[in-house]
Amino acid sequence: MDQQKEGRPVVRRARGLQRIASILDAAETVFAKEGFDSVTTHQIAAQAEISPGSLYQFFSNKEEIAQALAARYIEELQGVYGTIFSLEAAALPFSQWLDQVVDGLIAFHLAHPAFDILFDAPPSLAVAGLTQQLPKELQARFELGFQVRAPHLPAKERRLSATMSVQLFKAVPRLILKAEEAERKVLINELKTLLQRYLEPYLA
Image (cartoon, rainbow, N blue to C red; front, side):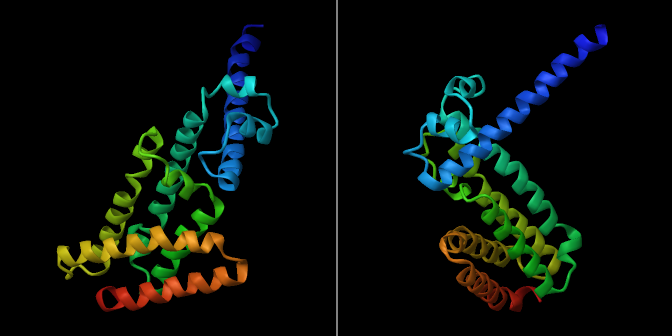
């Protein structure tokens, strides 16, 4: 009997985590379709196939949902950064390394179409404080990768090249998300070509 009592909180926690994940999945779908401003908690609850009352057991409003979703994005993105900007990856031939960086970042954006919506969230939201750190993190990762590939490159040039690369990655994924699949492939190849021509003199 005691073992059953001890097991029940674990089961409840697991179910609670599953419900939270379901709510965040639903929010991602609704935010991607409708944008942030017009979405209501009732729409998110309907997408999650739960009652608004059940949703409010976990989140007080859509801002809290957005913050939790942004935190989940950031955690996953840190894993992506850890892979594509690892020391092992930086040791790859230049074109192979660049393919891995572009493909990894674009795959993340395609898997999470609401990311850019939260990225552009109003500064008054707590979620904005989370997402505003991401360009700095991405730039730091690029600079580290450049340092490994081209230790002779002055720090000022590494920083400038990283800044330009980050700006491209902030703008181009939005075009790719809006494009049809055939055009999407063309845009991804164009991004790789652009980055290769820009970075190759420094890093190849």
